[in-house]
Image (tube, rainbow, N blue to C red; front, side, top):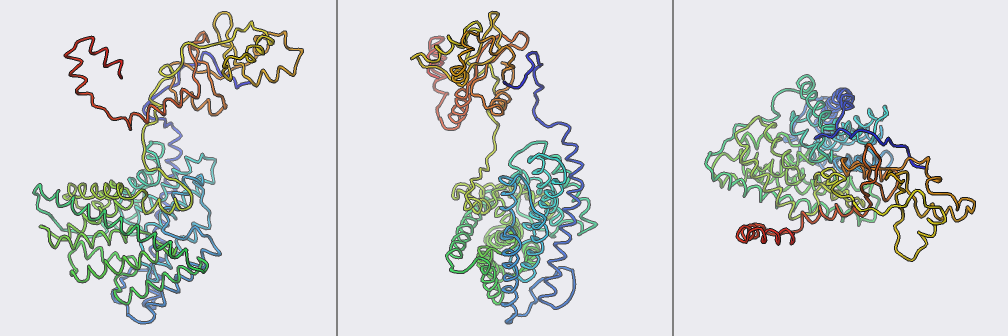
Length: 607
């Protein structure tokens, strides 16, 4: 017997969005999650500074320092290797999820883990990242804070009775709040959530994420500091041709991104071929980091001082070239080894260094081209162009370069999308057997009413038909459907008869004289209405596992049509055709106007 359904129910209220007042509960929760994200960012930054000072300068101090003054000796090689060994042990006996830069793991938790993260990850990820970066690892703090802030949001959500979608919202809110606290970029953090983590664009998730980021921005001056993270006074000539130059810089950044991504996963394959347990890989990666530090100490650790010098113009071409080459090599090897650390800060350095070098041959301030290179590299590599643009603006407080930033980041995004099937983030997920699609579109089921797709001439069985007659009907040689509506004399639908019913009735000889009305008079069939959206009906069909649903008038329950799974699949085929079928209508339109009504009729028939 089917679930009861009111025949006279009023049409459900439709609107632009499905969000309801439940979002206010998530907003209240986002306040706590956002606060937790800021606290996690503060702890992570202090932990990184503490480890850095302790390892390199033998002092107990939680203030950020540069490794530019670190002494080039045997300890510079040993420290990153020891750090990598500790991380390998933590991953082996703690949690393997601390390996890598954090964002792919957050995406996996969202897509296949119902947005559940463990307390162990929330504790070990920032600790392992602090050890990795503090001992010289060429990484940033953004990946770890995304993972840690996300874990805080997920753990908080798991304390309440929430859906997987609501847990995802709080996970992403924590991640975005942490990124806001680290960089002071709330708008870019919201865009990163949309372009990278939410896999949707809905007020249900956007409003709580915005709440968490706005709160993090308000708390950041108290916990970390105020104002843009980097000072910047670069400028470009306002001439129109600078956009063409910016496109060129973006194309080069896209090619650079593709090269780094390819080399990273080639290096990962080489580590996979080693005849030793992966627990030892981070130590090998750390050894390579230390050797690179002997060549260029400023290539070690986060490198925020390098970004500041690129944007401030306090650096030479020789230093830029050396940092670009050395940091690229050790970053690829270290990240491929499975150690813990983020990719965003290194990407900014790679794009900024190349942009600064290009700026030596382009009119204008090289610092401006460095900023454009940073945004292009970030937007192209992470496939998040809007995030790259706003991140550069918020990072420096400069709005004058929006046009060139848009052109360069768009060009880099186009190059990487066309050259690489997957990004540096999703390739790791794909190698674990998961397929991630980063394209969002309107559900065609939400655009259509049931009346647009239903079959109007429906074969139905009379309620007066006996069970014997129904058995004979289904046993006939003619092709039969798996189910049919049962229609009373006045046209009302009282139920559905299926082949399963027929098979059951054959074993019950005492019911053969009964009518279909007798067998289904107490049923409340799953029905649809012509004025509802196909999406609502498809959801009910999936929930009740039915393949054919009668469509009835709301007031009379009279049969007006029928929708089957085949009709739903036809919608999918039509949506695909709209993307793939190419034709020109301009010539047809002119021909139709010249020929008059007859020509118009031909065009309509052809379409």
